[in-house]
Image (cartoon, rainbow, N blue to C red):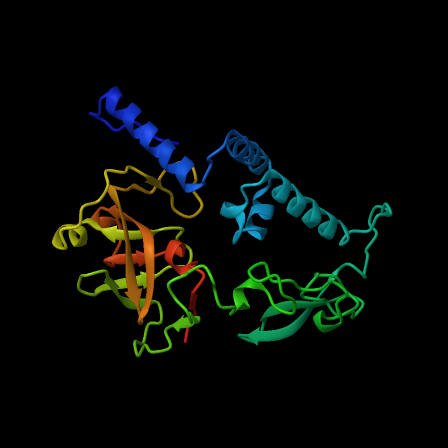
Length: 294
């Protein structure tokens, strides 16, 4: 959704729409009619998916641009979820002990309140954290865990430390951890060094889908943002944007001697954030970057 700014002419609004559309098409690499039609079909399917399913695929949701790939994952998820429920009709008032959850790992606070971890059903059968079924644990699970990053088994993507081969200029590129050389008390507050500039205070924000830079910093470093207007939404409300960017910079920056290049950094008003730079997933999800809280 792209809104017309107050005081802007319709001609400028049409130019902004065209620029935004071209940027989106180039970003998703829709260089043929087939790819473009796939994106439209995929978008229509995504609109029919519940928020619960979107949350399940949150790491891959923006990357699922093929309708065939999307429906395959959705059907697999539906089939897996359907196994949790009995196919036999239940009588009214019937209580199924096998599929009910047993609260385990009890932690008592203030003598009364209890917090539970769901690890068994009422019958005492253990829950597998690989397939979420009962009667076995993950090491005995018949469903093989496959990493979507390297397609190898026995680990998932967030624990994958495979070396990337996407950077042809790096002959021996290895994964580094952000924070391994840091002595700061707050693991999420860092010093980020934009290319050819001084370090600035930054916040690692895994919930942010993009990187945000204060306008005053862009002006101080005499950066030249592209005149891109982008609506940025906060958590929960997807109808009213939390703020509107004032431009976009394509650059790189370094954190704890780990460098990421070609990042889209949106320039936003100073009053919208307390730190100079918010580091979002466009930088954190670069294949050769791994981050841990130490």
